[in-house]
Amino acid sequence: FANVNFDLAVAIAQNVGVAPPVSGGSQVTAASPALSQLNTNFSPESRKVAVIVGTQFNDAVVIPVLNQLVQAGITPEIISEKLGAVRGKNGTLLKVDHTFLTTDSVVYDAIYIAGGYSESKQFSKGMAHFIYEAFNHYKPLGATNEGKLWLEMDAIGESPGIVMSDQPDWFAPEFIKAIAT
Image (cartoon, rainbow, N blue to C red; front, top):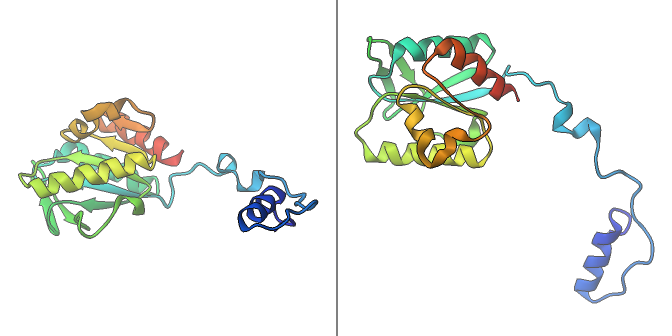
C-alpha cells in the first residue's frame, strides 16, 4: 500500500500492529483537470427529467415547458399517481411513464414539479420523499403552478438550483440552464 498512498499504508500498519513503512508513496497528483467536473461541457442534452404531474394540471403552462425541454435535448418522464394518462385543465392527456412505486429520484438529473392535484395521501408522501431526496442530492428542481407549494415548504425554494415561475417563456430557459450546470 505504501506505493499507492504512504499515509494510508502507515494507518493500515498501525491498525494491524506491524511496523509502518519508512518510504513510499505515489508521484501522481491528488487532482486531475481531466477528471474535474468544472472542465466539463455544460449541456442539457441527454439529461433526464422527472416531471411530477397531478390531475387538472395547467396544460397552458406545462405543455410549452415540456416542448422546450425536448427541444433542448432533454428527456422528460411523466410521474403521476397512476399509470395510464393524466388529464390537464384544458383536456390535454399526458402518458404517465411512472409512479413513485416504479421509479426513484436518483435516476433523474432534475425534477420538474408541474402541479395539478391529488387526493391521495400516499401520492403526497411519495412526492415529498422524491423531492427531498432529489434536493439532498443537489439536483436542480423546478416548479410551476401548484408545484411551487412543495418547494416553498421549508424554504427550499430559496436555495440555489431551484427555479419557480408560472411563465413558461421565462421558466423553461432558466430551468434548462440549471439542468445544464
